[in-house]
Length: 484
Ligand code: ADP
Ligand code: MG
Image (spheres, rainbow, N blue to C red):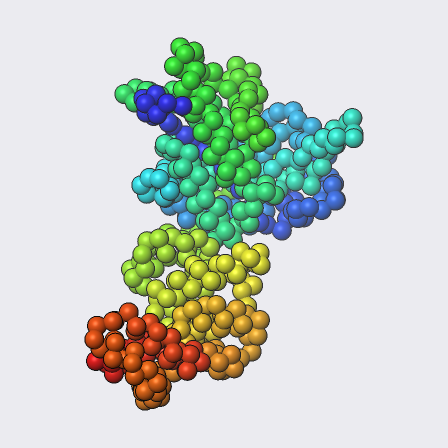
């Protein structure tokens, strides 16, 4: 699309993010919540909504939701009820979903976004509420009937609803990424988008730059990755602008994203919307969040990525870029903090984590938790480089990989074994240089007459004679002095 046309419009996006809470049992009964079990094994008469069964609220669900609210600086509701949202669907055995309509557990709140191409900004939340997941309809290619798996029915969710504050697909991407980080730091959701633990619907509209009112919004469902979210938004922006430019109206509708074509298509319009007839669920008592309970939950709050980000810049003098990357995961941030207890070279610690360590994690497909070296060991390597005992390249290309395989030895012992300890003794290097000078009388004369390029040849011989162990910086400096 022509940039000048696109620039006439402001994009408005609001997200609704569902996060599956990592409790071991369901929200209203004690069925397991494991992902990937055989269909219909984690079910009971309560999950199946048999007549006469009663739900009982899982306390952990409330605690996890409150943690998210605290992390987002939301107001925590002290009194709340649960509501029935009535609709028919084969994966919804009760004929209604128990959710929170009028008394969401968290009201308001904020989440920072830091988009790649844009400024850091706070995005306002409208609410966070608790609800149950539905089952899953399965359409197998060789099967004419639709199958239903109820394992997921009754798995606890929180739904995080933003105000229409996001202004680009980059910001939406960043928001989802921040939410993912938060739930993982809080240990309340595994954040796994492929398994559906984190899902996102996007409400998108466009309006002319000077318009006073938002345009009609379209809700796009069915996006199971950050990348799909971004593609769907980009596609929808272009589709809406093209329609408006052609004098057409935007329909308030729900659309679905097709991963294969990267396009969205209409599912249903607002006129066909269900009337859910919300009403308070008479089977569940109201929940009261007491002062003590809230204080207990507050006491379990870990340091959050944003706090660590700021602390890393301030306390360790790191560039914002480093701080951002290191706080991407709680495990890496914690490792970095431990590393900094063992070395004062914070920037080197950061470089090692962002470079060689991250490569190892990627190559081996492991998490920081499973990284074989103790922070103390990595600090030793940093110390060897800082004290010029091992060159940086020998450390990263030989010592570090060897240490990963053979981590019983101390870094110094292993460096000695591998013959990587460089000579930074002026006397011994001086003797080698004297030898080289004595063996090259003619060249030395030429050098002294102005052929300075010969320094490389002399250095080569010094390094050769030292079997590569002379500290190159020191050797170079001594050589220049002796050649004067
Ligand atoms: P609905 O009545 O359709 O459920 P809500 O007002 O409850 O709409 O908002 C649902 C989501 O849509 C929220 O995330 C909100 O921020 C977002 N939203 C509301 N209006 C717009 C708009 N004009 N453009 C984009 N997003 C919007
Ligand atoms: Mg709504």
